[in-house]
Image (cartoon, rainbow, N blue to C red; front, top):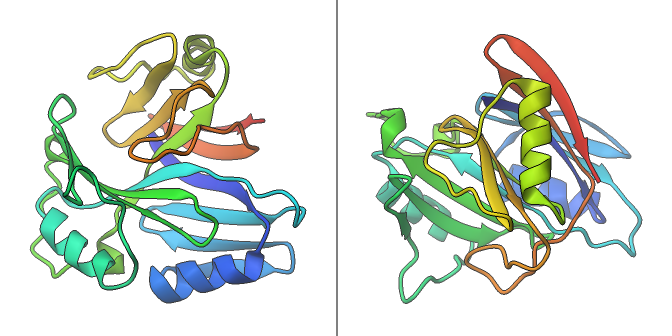
Amino acid sequence: MKISELIIQTSNLYQTETFYSSILEFKILSKNESYVSFIVGHSVLTFEKTDNEIKPKYHFAFNIPFNKMEEGLLWISEKISLIEINGDYIAHFENWKAKSIYFYDNNENILELITRNDLNNYSEHKFTNESIISINEVGIVTEKPMVLGNEIIKMTKSEFFAKGPKREDFVAVGNENGLFVISNSHRNWFPTSYKAEKQRTKVRIKVDDTDFDLEFN
């Protein structure tokens, strides 16, 4: 599964454009007064303007080459404060053979740079914003994660992530290239104290050679 486009909401389009274009240095694909879209490797990240009183918060991750975690850490730490995890800035996920760095954007969305050893996507190039390969994970919130996971699988012919977890309160659907991490609202998004919140989210994915447009509210 690959995530072609993620479409989410922001109450401050101008600040969001500034953050992603100036701090993360993503190229703008298109924009107008109601949205802005950025090129993120093989994916597109789009923000739609919503009511100023609504402050939606999301969690999503960007995939980087598996040998570039230390360089990625240096690159992002020079731009913005990182979320500390037990005295460190790198989270280790042994079961997933993955490592992650976490930080917030201007909307307090929880962003993540993730490396996955099993993708074997070695890079010899110096780390820059262009080292970001794609959007790799999208957090989705529902009161019945297992039910929604099965619905996505039935609709898209995808599968539960082979490395798990698969619980009533949290499941992962997809594979190393793209995942839905599906939580209920009683959990915090790791590694923060923010409760997972149900927000309007649209995702275009590709499974094998077929495109699917999914919407979650």
